[in-house]
Amino acid sequence: MNNYKNNKIAKFEKVSLDRFIRDFSDKFKDYSLSNIQEIYNSIKLPKRATIGSAGYDFYAPVTFKLKKEETIIIPTGIRCMIEDNWFLGIYPRSSLGFKYSLRLNNTVGIIDGDYFYSDNEGHILIKITNESPENKICTIEQGNSFVQGIFLPYGITIDDSSTHKRNGGFGSTNK
Image 1 (cartoon, one colour):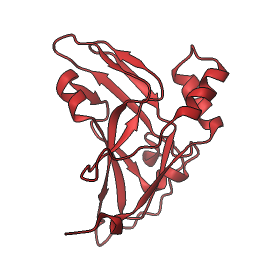
Image 2 (tube, one colour):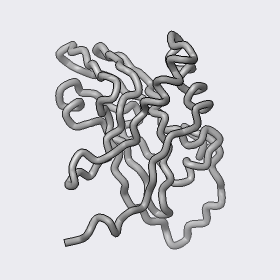
Image 3 (cartoon, rainbow, N blue to C red):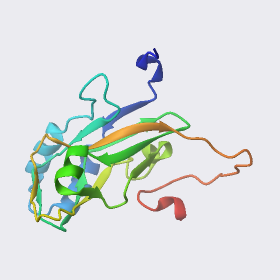
Image 4 (cartoon, rainbow, N blue to C red):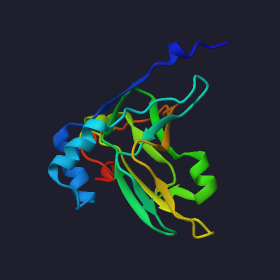
């Protein structure tokens, strides 16, 4: 049996308080600076629920509700340093997908290793939509997990010649 301790390839950490304040206040207009600082201080790093879990749970920094067909962008306050030839896939928690048809707007979030070094500090933002066919309201309480991240290896072609360096967030590899 493979010992999982040999597969350590990444490290989660918080983005800076300044970065979090910029991104959070851009998405949530009704919070004061002191409230945002309290939210930042309460952010929990992602972790696995059990030793057999493949995914690292990401926790909601604030309580939010999504009605049918509503969308929200959640600044997690988290960044991730990842070893070469690995990426972090972000997926909705299975139970939320099952109960509410909760989905990520980009289907699967792909966090590349070089995203950590971007101007935005590699801040992981999660955009999700409630597509519940039963008109259910999805409520996620602050501190509860709502998405999970799974580390996966990837390969490149023999004739790969990429030299472009990332400097930005969403869509920055096309610039």
